[in-house]
Image (cartoon, one colour):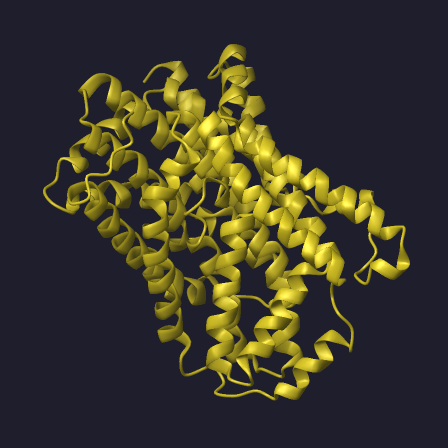
Length: 453
C-alpha cells in the first residue's frame, strides 16, 4: 500500500471510531468534521475535490435544512400533535388499531418530511400518548419501534423522504418522477411487510384495549392547532408536492421547492404569533426554532463526503465496483438482491451516508469501465438506495435516524439495549431488503422500467 491508501484508510477508521464511541459526548458532525480536516491536512483529499464534494452534496444538505425547518414550524404550530390526537380518537380504545394507526402516521410523516424529522418529532409525541393512556413498559415498545423503524422504512418513495435519495438523484441526474415510479411500489410493499413483522414481534405485548376517555386529557380541552393554521399547513403541503413534480420537469433542485415552502410557513407562523386569537400552540420565537434544527447533521453530511472521497482515491471504490458488478450478474432476482445485501452490510456497520457515497462512486466507475446495460445500471442505482435505506436497520450505527431515535428515547428515560434492538432490527432489515429487491426485480424484468442513464 502507498501513503495515500494507508492515510485514507486510517482517517476513515479513526472517523468511524469517533462516530461509534463518541468520546466525551462528541457529536456526529464534529466526529466527521475531524475526519474531513484530517483528510485535507494529510492530503488524501485535495481542495478541488473538497469543492466538488460540496457541489455534489449542496442540494441534499439544503433540502435537509428546508425539510427540518418546515417540520419544526409545523410542530410549533401543533400540527403533529393534532395528527396524533386524530389517530388516538380513530383507534377508539383498541390497542391494536392504535399500533397500526401510529405506524401509518409515522410512515406518512416520514414520506412527507423525511425520516429524521419523523423520528425527532413523533417519538416524543408517541411517548406522551402511551404514557397518558397508561400503557405499560412492555407494551410501549411496540409503539416506539413503530415510531423509529417504520419511519426509516418509509423514507423511500419520494426523493425528499431521505437526503440520500437526493444525493443519488443529483449524482445520476434522474428526476423526482423517475424516483417515484421505481420506489413508490417498493415502499408500499416494504411498509406493509414492516408493519406486519413488527406487529408479529410485539403482538403479545400490545394491549387489547385502553381507556379511551384518557385520550381527551391529551388535548386539555383545546385544539392543538388553530383551524386557520391547519388549513394553511395542509394547503402548503399540497403546494409543495405539486412543486416537486413541476421542478422535476424543469430540472430545478428539490431544495428550492422545500425551502420556499418552509420560508412561507415560517412567515405565516411569525404573523400568527402576533395575533393571540389566531394562535393556540406553544409560542416559540424564531431563534428558538432555529436551535431545534439539527445543524450537526448538516455538518456530518458535508464532512463525511470528504472522508469518503479519500477512500475513493485509495482505490476502495474499485473493489466495491467489481463486487457490485459481479453480484449484479447473478441470475434472476439474485441479480438485484445480492448487490442490495452488499450495500446493506456496508451501511449497517459504517453508516448509510458514507456507504451511499461509496456506492454511487462505485456504480459510476462500473458504468464507465464495464459498459453496463440500462437494466443492470438501473438495478445497481436502486439497489444502492434499497441497501442504504433499509439495510441500516440491522445495526443502530447504520442510520442517523435510528441513532437519533435511540438518543431521543434515552433522554426521555427509555433505554433499549443493543440485544433488544437486534432482535427486531436485524431480522426486519433483511426481510425488508428481500421484499424491496423482489419488487425492484419485477419492475426491471417484467415491467421493463429503465432510467435511461
